[in-house]
Length: 63
Image 1 (cartoon, rainbow, N blue to C red):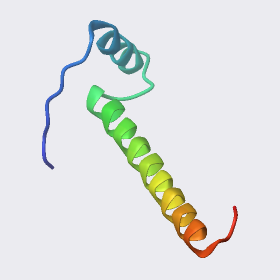
Image 2: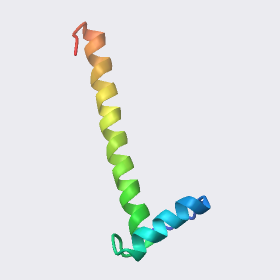
Image 3: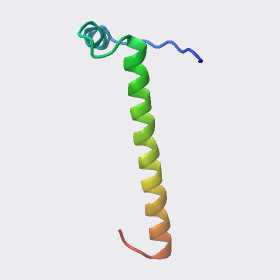
């Protein structure tokens, strides 16, 4: 699996650390991985919505 590194603010780091310490996630990697999955799903939905909206406007239909 590819690896990346990123910089977080101290506050962001502390919130993630707390989620792991409370057992919500088993590791910071798990927290970030789930966040990325959710973001990608949201973006796909948004892209699909924009695409269908554009097609409807092009054909003169309304939402």
